[in-house]
Image (cartoon, rainbow, N blue to C red; front, top):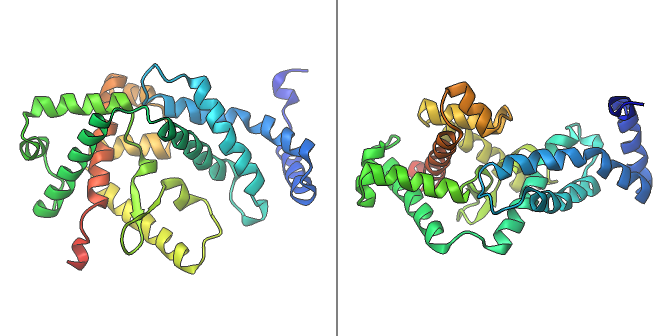
Length: 264
């Protein structure tokens, strides 16, 4: 029997979910973990594309397995969305949480990333538009060439990700990831309202990005292309795509950090 023939059918998986939801059988849980293990490898591969080569993809897979197990334990098939949609954000979140816990990014690089983000936020607020590279460089007291080099350094350490982008709540102290805006987390009325508001804010902020940056984010986060595949589409190198992605996310975070412009 070939590998393709050995794969359970969709109906068999649906039945497995129904039986597991009712019985919470350890055996069924293990079978679901094995079935969706490839999903962890997929997410780990996408996350590793923005990380230094010193971070082993096998380590990311092991971190992501905890997210998969958590997703299987908490998933409710009756809610009407696909398990893959629900699980991907939790797998990615588990990987990112572990990377944060080992604190592998130099503090100096985190500080530089925050400085660029703050510059984008300040200039966006003052200019009422996306600032140019020249304007950002001037705000940071560096040349445009140095700014491009800084984008490359930040992208090498992979410390900007859409998962870390969005803050909600009246004091902006609560964080919500893009995955949280997709998957139901049994939020109460206030939480559901804030997530819906966040989705609208995120969509509006992405729409205000320059076309190239918007295109890269769309292909990466919504179409599921790798950075290498995006490079092929745009006829540029993967490292250049990584820089554009970094610049786009820093701009996006700057837009979302604007100090309550509408309420000022």
